[in-house]
Image 1 (cartoon, one colour):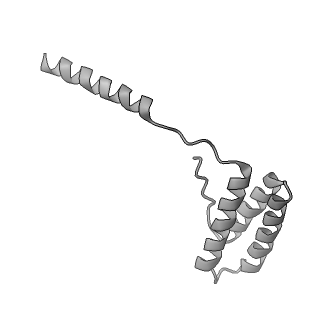
Image 2: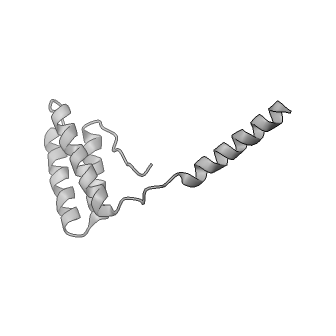
Length: 95
């Protein structure tokens, strides 16, 4: 009997937890641009000796320009490529 009560209480606790969890809305493209550009800034500081620093900075400038001109998809790609040149995997907070 105790095992059955324990099972019921565990199921109840698990189902109650899932209904109270709040999911943050996905980031907008503008927010993703900002986050990725910040990641490139951090990567440039920590990977200053990387051979591709100049190319990464150029991609960051292009990406920032695209983002500012309402072409966020292209900007996001440029910024992600800048991170990859520095050997850093872009962090997407939505995942």
